[in-house]
Image 1 (cartoon, rainbow over the protein chains, first blue to last red):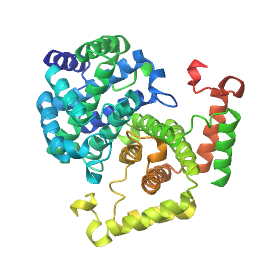
Image 2 (tube, chains in turn brown, yellow, cyan, blue; image 1 turned 90 degrees about the vertical axis):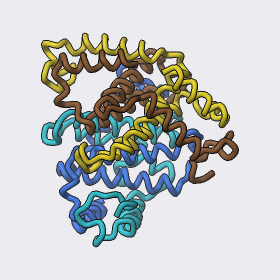
Image 3 (cartoon, chains in turn brown, blue, orange, red; image 1 turned 90 degrees about the horizontal axis):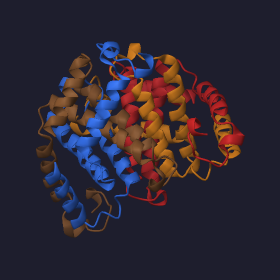
Image 4 (cartoon, rainbow over the protein chains, first blue to last red; image 1 turned 60 degrees about the horizontal axis):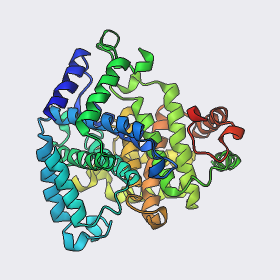
Length: 106
Length: 106
Length: 106
Length: 106
């Protein structure tokens, strides 16, 4: 993933866009892109959503998420593995198995 | 990143959650988590947002994004690099440098 | 507001769209439109956002919110007044005055 | 609706919160609340979502939408009726009837 992050930063710097990329606007950008991704599923079943478009919008979500992680010097793999560990406590297998309930309703 | 994806799938399968993880609901989940991330910046400057919470919510955005990518067998690095290439055409350096305008206004 | 709701329903029914307007997809639509509204503020100060576009996207947020309220037979004025009352308890004036903190941090 | 708007403004002013309510943060707030509303439908069918919670989260979406409209002195009924008119052109009945396609695919 390191190579991808370097490409994203190169793209940003070549356009002198770092001035716009404060963490708050990056979080806004993630939401905007997540909304565009979601639109592809609006009024339809998942199977009718267009895979090619999903690929593009999901790539945008990843791109801004990586740029936000980079702002805070987060190691992406590490923060996900940490969160999985945390979620393991919130959602113990014996209670969470087969149910979509939120942890505070288990 | 392959290891992280395997951990996410293991976590999901141990809880028998694949039944809930259709692509539409995963796109919904990405939006829900993106909203929780955004809330950390609400009514404040980026510098006052809590880094520890950002780490957790951003991890959730990544987690569901990776699970959605996995559903479609997308190679995450590849789709981001493809999108960077595409954006290079939409945002040529000489036109896009130093401006936050959208491509259709350049 | 009753007149507006009737116009929204007429518009929907003339196009035979009620079949798509289940509550989950309406909630998805609200998020999609909220994202489009948010995009108008991306990378910029509020004063540089385009008022004409804000008008349109905000109208869309209202439209789907009204259609969702109608699905559940909610009285819009009533549910907002109820929520204000509830928030008055969560955010007592003496504690909440002048601070943007969330209720669980007051 | 005028009465509700006055109540929202009273609630805000009693807490001296106007300082935080710039249009960009209000748009952020709408997204945060829209995300909380959407979460109520996550991993489930609409029929299994909790009506009481939907009422509360939808009220929040309305509240911030009204406060944003007030910032720009928009007449809410007017902007929705204008948008319905505009959508009538984008989605002519004969083309749009019975299909969930976006206007650019009709």
